[in-house]
Length: 220
Image (cartoon, rainbow, N blue to C red; front, side, top):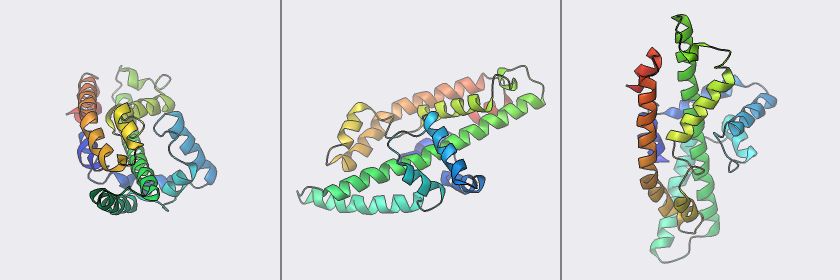
């Protein structure tokens, strides 16, 4: 959770508070149908996985659940779980299940924020390519449609975000154990760092060679 916000996020150009984007998202949708379509789009693009219940997503969009509250509760429950573990007692299942839910929820908040950020950068890059009359593929809106831009943004999220669904099998398996909420986040961070750092540089070199001023500036 913290590694996404403080380590991986800034590496992708996100600010210190990436969750501000949810205020914009909340203003964008006026009906339940629009919110549901947005949720389905995130599922289709594989930004979110089946681990996110529909009710939780609805609470996130409507502000009933927010990342700051989730992180605060997560830290409180982690302290309680550590006390049980230190005394040699088994962590209550209710605490374990809630820790897992909160970890997944905060991951979801971050991945949505990163998706919106990457999509915004791609749209800005496309607008620039069209404005200067560039011959680069991004300027061709018959190929690089809204849907294609969304797919590209989602691919970048999967490449550069630490998340429950993208975690290595060892970390996912540990997460399911009763001590998982205490150990898995640290193991997952260590296992994910090489993948995300490699992909960050890979995307950076690709953007530097794109010929697009917006992407080149972002890569630097």
